Length: 185
Image (cartoon, rainbow, N blue to C red):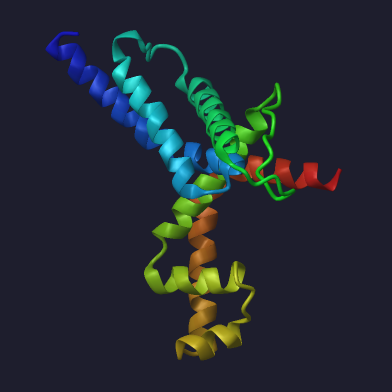
């Protein structure tokens, strides 16, 4: 590749990395159940693309390719780790097949990624209060006591967190509704 083509590839590669990295990590975690291993697998996919950049075509949609490449690497990771594992207990990670229509799994990973990006972007105290309430099941009064703040402050911070989540996730509302409806069937 010439110098101009290198710069164009680098820019497109960086854009693709920023756009898909988090979603791919959450997608991989569904198979590996370990975020560190998931990140490692996703990094390996991007390294392979970088190393074979002369053959990578940005004109074709990258999303399906990336998710399939991550899925394949996850399966290889599980196979390789199970090969060396002497643990035959029933708790051993089972390989989950990727369904023919994997778009739901991809969309779920993207939704989860966007939710966590939004939660992580919350101001520190707001994020802490939100996590205590929504993930640890603490009531407002318990949070107020633990953090030595008023219940009114907890209410205000929760309202702020929910407003930010609502604004940042409005483009994903259709996915959320779809998943809720499917879980009811």
